[in-house]
Length: 315
Image 1: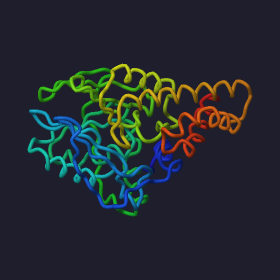
Image 2 (image 1 turned 135 degrees about the vertical axis):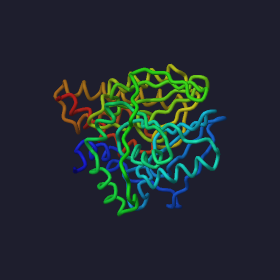
Image 3 (image 1 turned 90 degrees about the horizontal axis):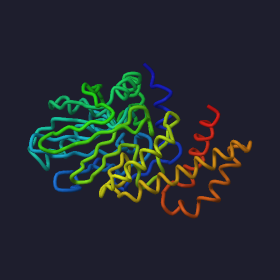
């Protein structure tokens, strides 16, 4: 099966708009950084499409150590990357890896699943995400291998086998985990994870820090704004995005306000029979001074965002 058009568009949303950014050392460095007492991050220094330069490592993973085992949130772009994540986890705990949560169906967040299944972990996601994963199937593995010139190596596919309801609480190893949907804000089937006692939110690509919100043609902008407002009202002390550095609630509020402003300007412009390029100029003029200092990619990504929202007015 060839990689689906939807997946190619999702990759374009973080690839062709913003060129890959990579640290000076392009070798893997799967170091586990403590976020809190039992929460750790493995942050990719790369942002953009999988490439030979970044070897497919372009998204973040996180893990929570409980009294009954380890829960991992997102597994990276390949089985090889998954094995590297496991090695990093074992450097800080002897607890077995028991659970994996896939935040959504974009391949850079779940193709590492097989490495975790091999050590006995159960893979959890939403049924909608799993259906999208199966549509991509082997095609996305082959595409990532081509894009990275073989750096992702041989990746076997392991789909989720347990599924989350729209709002669900699970107690795992004496820790309470809350899960809720973004209502397709970023992509169909997105799920976020919340640790209420520690006030830590895991957002996948629904949440952003260094870069503008990652929007895809299948995403629902009004629903994403609603989700961001909901997350902001939780008052998280730590926000863990799918790409970029950990951040705080201010990033959530910033993203919601940006998307609300762009949506309003595009909608009003469309209703006034303005072309997309005219609306883009207005958006850059009205919002640039406020938001350009807040994002690494405001200028390069605004055109994509405006065009994507403009097309949604036609639909």
